[in-house]
Length: 575
Image (cartoon, rainbow, N blue to C red; front, side):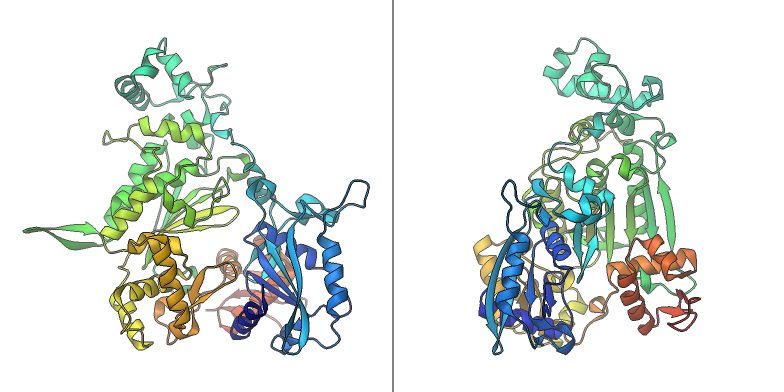
């Protein structure tokens, strides 16, 4: 980071009034803050970040009186430097990648440390004195949060190919598989994969080569059981799909008597779950009339084949480890979008935008190899396993004038969001006119609409949405940045500026944070809790809870039952 980048970063912090997910500011007067190791761990495990030492957040990010830049820089370098054999153990392991510099800011010196994200195979970075289980952190919003045991497990699984899908399911035999599905699979493979059929002595041998059965023991594998079992939920009750239809665009938006319009559960083998869930969504989504030459037809708001692909991806690539046996694939329908999410994050260390290139990497390699031959009730098959699914989704959404699918990944969950309304719908067009952008060219307007819809852009998203090459997409984003419409964060992504977000429309209204949504969800189900019970139920720290509860009370979303000093103080949702 140079002086100009520092000035721009602090200017953004002052506009927001707080730290961000990518920038942490500390006064650090007199000594290194004890929390620095946790922050460096969090940045290393998330997407990197910047530490700025020598500014006071409480005074509006102005230089801290008495700050000694040289001493703090030396202390920080000592904290993160690699250790040689025979030296005392390091503060963090593996060694973080940190660049420390001293820069001038408003007549004073500050210390800036740029922390790079570690490669997937090196994560998690943890505070050594706390150990991996207690000392691994991730960055959420503007805070450092201790990673769950599950998140640590998932990061560690990036180092090698998981083989959970070929584990034998104890107590399950061929008699527990659906005869029609099993026969359909064998018939298809023998008719379409001549080489495999030729080298298989019999049907049992073929099923072993497909890893429906274990080659050594002949037991049914997890992949075979989930794809072909009569009722896999008999042994894995949460390996199913849950469906919910909400009346508002966020869970906190429904505060009347109707909190949910509809709900459902879809279980059975994977083909049945897909078929049942698709039937429900197709029946629920409103139709719109599309002209086809001289005729016209009614089609769902979201192309059903795109929905199918998203559901297939969630079932095929979800985490099936013991840590995730209590988790299900979730389908949630909101007024503005359809969300399909699964446990497990993105396996293989890729970023969300990198999924658009169609490269295929599978957490469950044998399951994804099996599903293309597993029949659906309509005699089609579950999937292709050609790495073309996401590219098909992109093309289909674009052809209907809809934004690209949005992929959101945390360390423990992955969500695909499919917009129900067009990129340039009337509300967006009206908003762009209100903020003075109406005279921009068509591509610029589309890019701004995309920024408003997604909240964050890079050149790859713009490239695929607007059919541009990467260079032209980058130039377009830089032009909108120079025009004051977009801001560029330290990771290189572009976000809507205050100029673009002025006079917000309903879809731009301030949303509660992820941690606040967790609190609201717990209070909705548990009605009224004290802060320690909330901490146990949400896995959030007391400090985070106090901050979030204060905001929720100020927003009239939560009510406290007693004064702050009372030991009887509890919290419940506002009426």
